[in-house]
Length: 354
Length: 280
Image (tube, rainbow over all chains, first blue to last red; front, top):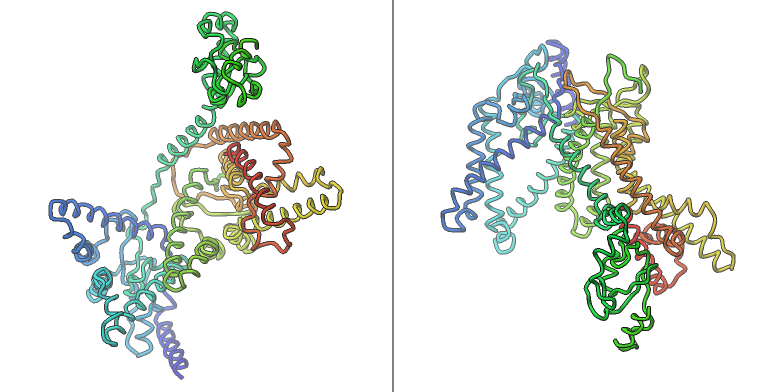
C-alpha cells in the first residue's frame, strides 16, 4: 500500500515536472577535484591545529589534551563560519575551482525533494541552461551543515574520550546504558553509511562526504573555462634520483678499491709495485694484520700465501681481492692442515716450509 | 598504435602520476573498508578479512565502480588521460566491456591467482620427483622440469620485484602499459588535456634500468652455476620454499615426515638466501 502510494506520488510529481520541462541537465564534476579539495581543507585544518599547539606549549601539560575536542571543534567552527557559512568556497575548493551549490534546486531525485513529493509539498526545480548554474546554500541548509560538521563530531568525541560512554555501558541504569549502546550503534551506522557514500561517490561523483549528501550541498565548478595545471617537475626529479641512486648502489660493490688496485698493477707492472710496497711484511706474519703466527692460518689460492682465517675471509668479501704479497687474484682459500691439534710452533714451522 | 594529428598518446609521466593517484584513493577506500570490518566483524574475522580479502575486495570495488562501468578512474581524471584499446582509427575508448571486466578482475585477483597456479605446479613437480625417487627411476634431469621451475620461481617476492622492475624499464622505453594487467588487456592511454607543455621521455632511464637488471641477472646466473650442484639447488629452491600456504591450497597428501620436511626446508632456505642476495 505504502509502496504504491510512494510510486504514485513520485510519478505524479514527475508528470507535473515533465509538463514544465523535460529534465535538468546532469553535470559531471571530476571526482578527483572533490577528493583533493577535501584533502586540502583537512591539511589546512591540521596546519591551524599545529599553530594552536605551539600556543599551548608554554602552559602546564595536560590542558591541551583535556581541551582537545573543544579546541578542534572551535577551529572547525571558525573555518566553517568563515567559508561555507558565508557561501564562500574554502581554500581547498578555491584551488580546485569548486563551490557548493544547493542541489535541491536542481535535482528532483534528492531525498528532500522525494519526501516533499510524497507529502505533496511544492518543489521548486530551477531551469538550467548549462547545468552548472550556482545557487548558494540556504540559511537552514548551512545551519544543518554546520551542526553535522562541527557539533555532532564534537559531542561524540567528548563522550568517547572522557570515557562516559563506557561508564554508562557498565554502571548506569538501563535507560542510560541503552543510550550508550545507541551511541556505539550510531557510530557503526555512520561508518557504514560513510563507506556506502564513498562507493556511491566513486560511481556517480556527486557528494564526497556523507554530510554533503544529507544536506544537499554539491560541489560544482566555479569557472567553466579554467584548466588544470599539473606540474611533473617533482616526479621527473624523483624518478631520475631514484634510478641513479639504485644504479650507483648496484655498481659500487662491483667497482671496489680492489678492482682499481688490480688495474693499476696491470698497468704499472705488478712485480715492480709489489716489490716496492710489500717488502716490509715479515715472512711468517699475516700480511693483513701482521700477526705472528697467523691465527687459524689459511692459504690463499692459487698463490699459497698464509693469512689469518678471519682477515682473509673478510678481505674475500670484496670482489677481485688480490694477494698482499704477490698481487695475484685470490680465487679461494684452504686450511693449513689440522690446526686444532697442532701447537703454534708446529704451525710456524709448517708455514716457514711452505 | 599509430598516433594521429588529432590524438596524442599519453606520456609516461602522465600515466605514472595517474597510477599514483589511483593508489592513493584506493588506500582511502581500503581504510574505510577496514574500519567498517573492525566495527562489524569479530576480531578474529576482522584479522582474517584484512589479511586475506581486504586488498582484493578494495581493488575490485575501486575498478568495478570506475573502469568496469566505463568511467575514468580519479587518477586518470587528474592526469586528463583516457584509456583506449585497438589500433587507430578503430579505437574503442575505455575498451570493450569484456576487456574492462577482465582488467578489473586481474587488478584485484591476478596476483593471487598466479600464486595459486604456481603453487599447484610446484606441488605437482615435487610429487613427480618424489615418486620417481621412490620407484628408483630418475625423472629429474628433464628440460621441462627446469622450465616449470623457472615458471614457479615467479611466485617468490624477489623475482616478482625483478620482473616488475624489468617491466618498468620496458614501460619507460615505450611509454605504454604501465602494469602487467594493462599489457595483457592491451589498454593504452590518450591525452585529453587541452594544452600541456611537452613532457620529457624516460627512455634513457629505461635503458639504464634494463642494463642494470641484465647485469644483475647475468651475475646471479653465473654465481648460481658456479656453485656445486647449483642448478639442482636452484630448482629445489624454486619448487620447495615458499609453500607456507600449501595446506590451504593443495589437495595432495604430504609424503615427507615433519622432521624430514624441516631439515629439507633449512637446506633450501640457505639457497634461498643466496638467491635473495643475487636478485635484489
